[in-house]
Image (cartoon, rainbow, N blue to C red; front, side, top):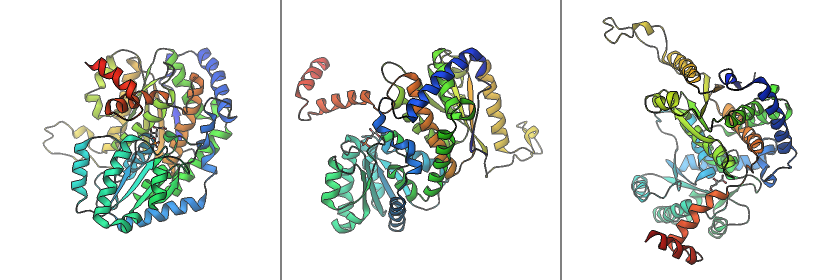
Length: 443
Ligand code: PA5
């Protein structure tokens, strides 16, 4: 049985069968473009065959490095941003206990430029043993570079240059970029980000695998799950047999019908960061040429008490994709109370997860009745294998969906605009003209 299923029954009333069938042709064409490597950005398709292409010696080296980190460190600082951060964060949040008691803590840094965060982090690290994994494919991204400059000094001051060298790991391009130059000069152990895998598709490369393995999560199982997904989604060439195609189809069809926002919802707090990873994957891949579904997320039932009103009753531009978990090994019974002053005795005999599942069902039906088409993606159980499967499912669906939309899924030209302004305003050499222009606007 597949680890993942898709139910579109609560979306179907928003389009006709004819529209669905017409869209099928477009999605199948987009699939062909992806599989034949003939579309825009086709030099970034390394993720497509990655599950079958692992160099097992490299995976071993990652696990060995993770083992050394676990032995020597209370904390691993994973320094990176965007695709060099969100994949590992999503996996670690999915599998670490809600209330951890020991183990190697992975702290993410370099994913913002907050001076107060760094200040508190340096204080926190004073009585901790730690290692650093600096992750940047380009090796030139400002946020992690600033963080690494400060943390490298701190770790050298704490352990001395030789011991610090054993505690710093660099994940970057095989040949180019400032980080590669620095890592080679300092003799840091280095892991390679494949040329043909872009940041947001890189969680199953060393970018994600080293911090994930250091957190004690089984990366072999993740790779196995991704491999099964590769077989399922590459081999099944019809929409009827391939839920990645069906998902891409329905979200594009709904988009054309005015549903401009896709809300990924979950009912399990440990999925909150998976939604952040998903938002980057689809947002950065599709939001271009003034097109694209705006991707948002909500954690339910929590956000039903904040965003719920808007979802139910605000502008009718939202579609919802619920990420549901079928089996949850841990649960809590609802206990009887003699006085029943809270009126909850009608729930006795049920568990909290059962109530949660009913809340999901009721909410989906309410949203659907209120004009929100709902798709439901059900994952069997939260396991590393299923994580790998789910990641590959979304990556494949994203490639097909972006080609259906008619954009290059693998570039991100829009990200440069803020960087240029920031560099100019900070006085970076080479940005003098823009600096003058911006300063005039500010005055
Ligand atoms: O998906 C992408 O390519 C981006 O989000 C990058 O991951 C992000 O900008 C970080 O880039 P780098 O790894 O080069 O520091």
